[in-house]
Length: 372
Ligand code: UD1
Image (cartoon, protein in one colour):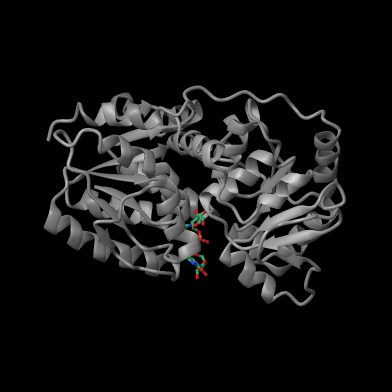
């Protein structure tokens, strides 16, 4: 039984569902959507882009506080587990749905597999860090994406035989969908963006957008970054909501239709994009400014310079050998980094080990050895 809940889950689980579907005699694969993300832009479009089957169960939990969301998912998921008795529950990443479903399953003595296990920012003010720690602590199969994950789990006393270094299923989706884009084009409303250099920005972490002073700093940074090239700011609903309540509104251009004739010095505001549209833009950006976890990895794979507006990362490989650099909200550091990027003197990134599009194959190989 695979669980998806929020946007970053969909690309991590899609390749596993695809792989499981190749062995119908061996696996009965059931999909549960918790409904943590529920609207067209944050959920449905990803099902289409990634070719994910219609969920067998939708828990329709919706938005709410952390405790509400987690508790409500647990109550509803328990009913599904009781009626369906899966042999294994697969959860991914670090969102509230991940911890809620792993807790529920473990208490019903159902084994749990955690995809993207072992990542640690060592910053317990991040809700995702708590979700990672708890999920890893109670999971039975821990699938890691980079060596730091194995080290963290070993340091926390997880027995070696539970840990499987399999690579990154999110990169599996990226590889597959890049081929789709190459064949058919992005199907995007954003075609015109290909005409000149641009930077791509996504910012939504509570630490960067919930406090108006921090958000103001972020917007000021994006405004300065737009002097190098137009900035396409793809906004998460959380960010958009916080921006509306800011006293001083940033001057920016709302993009509704196609992007054409981008101008330097302008920050363009875009709604949440589909997976294919975002991937298309990310692969063509000169620089990416983000506080997302997954985008640090995707830019590393694509070799696109990435500035992470945080002081830490749970994905250190992207800084050590990838194209990522941590810059916090330090404007000087960011402008110096942009100088290097736009002068073409950014570091030469490498693709991390096992980020080869075959992680889901390795996971399903492990699953086929489990006795039910
Ligand atoms: C969640 C994850 C975060 C991930 C992010 C990606 C947790 C703790 N956080 O944060 O790790 O990076 O998703 O998107 O699980 N909203 C909509 N439409 C939706 C879903 C949400 O408009 O389909 C709005 C909600 O009304 C809410 C806000 O977005 O105000 C936040 O949604 P929520 O699921 O609580 O957390 P995220 O901030 O998205």
